[in-house]
Length: 338
Ligand SMILES: O=C(O)c1ccc[n+]([C@@H]2O[C@H](COP(=O)([O-])O)[C@@H](O)[C@H]2O)c1
Ligand SMILES: Cc1cc2nc[nH]c2cc1C
Image (cartoon, rainbow, N blue to C red):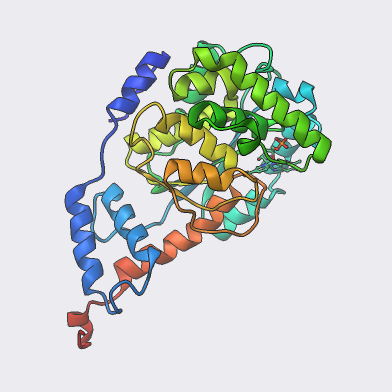
């Protein structure tokens, strides 16, 4: 089931038709887990991770051999409001850095054996300043969703989605406010490092943007169109494609999770094939993970984006699957059970 889409209505239908995990494979993996040479539960969350992965891969003894890291870059008109510590040109400059292998995510992808690609999406056409108008038209949103959808390698057995976009923590905060409520202060953090005055201004921008579009937002796709950006939409499209291919996903930081939340708030269960790779140092990321009912695998104080925290979590998932699929059972090893 990898039917594509050319309208937002068709994308919503793709989400509604998404496949579930293979319950038989998951139950078999659960049974195998109970026979492995360790005290019950001694591998902690690694056990749940391996069983979750087995269910999505449809086999009780899976391998993780071909992870894919996809980085999407987009520009944001809302940077005109002075919401970032860095100038908007950095988005394009960092794309060149990714292409030349000089960014953190290049190193982490190599370290964890992942193929990596960067997709710069219409950097010369920033998403509109959402305090003035919707960030994207429906056509622009669909095009960006498709960029993400088309970027997923059907042969991959794990996906990490990451992003680069100066100003995008402001978008992510506005999306979270629109989808989960509360106050602008609850969702607005320092991003690349704005000072106290910058944080106050950014909070105002988040509040005003959400208020302007609240009446037009009925689901996650509306929030993504009104308050998001092309790289957020592409991450959402890639996560949805992975689901259609039953490829598990590791979510990255605050912006990735805001994009993913747009799927969850459009279709219940849309993130069942996703695990949270890490909790970032962006102030509202713990709250967003709680809203998504996801527990992060790592907590290392990262606030980089680029898929970096999720890429690190590939190592954890590889460890979980190596143990699950490679360990001997009590019977095989002749070890006495409790
Ligand atoms: O992943 C995160 O949680 C995260 C937290 C803070 C900043 N970032 C990165 O920093 C950029 C956005 O920060 P800002 O201040 O320009 O909104 C964007 O390129 C993100 O990849 C990412
Ligand atoms: C240098 C730099 C690198 C980044 N990578 C992801 N977001 C970023 C933001 C900045 C400013």
